[in-house]
Image (cartoon, rainbow, N blue to C red; front, side, top):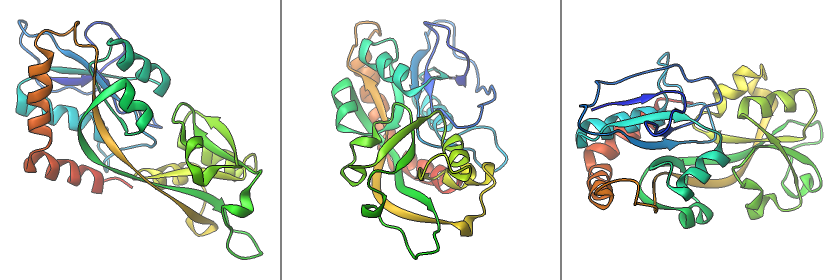
Length: 253
C-alpha cells in the first residue's frame, strides 16, 4: 500500500507534514487499483528532515501506517490554514498536526506521534538573561496559522507571522523581530539555515504540544471510514508504532 508526497490533485490526495524546506517527491509501493487512496495529511512547526534522507517525520509516519494497515495513503504539503479547512469540510481525511483544543473541534484524535517542545529564542544581550516579562510589547516570529499567540506565556508580545521557522530566524538575525518561536525537533536546522551561531541565542521555555494524527469528522466521503479509523487507531497506539515514531522523533534536530 502506498503513501507518497505529491502536489494537490483531489481526490487522490493526503496531506502530510509540512516542512520549512521543500519536500521532494517520494513514494512507497503502489496501491491496488480497487482501493482508493485516502486523502490525509500533516503540517507542523519545523523542518523534519531525517539525516540526509528527504523524508520527514509525517511522510514516514503515514508510510508506516499505510504498510501495516494495508490502507493506501497519498500525501501533499499544504499551509496550515488550508489543511485545517480540509479537515473541517472533509476534503482531507487524515492529518498530522500539533494537537490543540481548537483543532479537536475540527477533527478526531487517533493517536500521538510524539511531542513538540516550544521555546522562544532571543539573541543574547549584554545585560544578562532575558525574560518573557521583559519582552512584553516586543515582536516575535510565529508560523502563520499555528495560533501560538494564544499561549498565555506570550500574552503582551506581538506576533509577526512568517511562512517557515527558518524565515523567522532569518528575521531575528537581521533584527526585524525581537524573538522567534523555536519548535524542537527541527529548530536547530532552522537556526543553521539562518546562519546564527548557536552560542548567540538563549531560549525561554513555553511548554510542549503533542504531535497528533487527526481524522476528519466528516465521514460521508469515505466508505467504511469508522472501520478505517478504528484500524488506524489500533495500529497507531501499538507498541511497535509508538517505538517507530519515537525513533523518528529522535533522528531530527
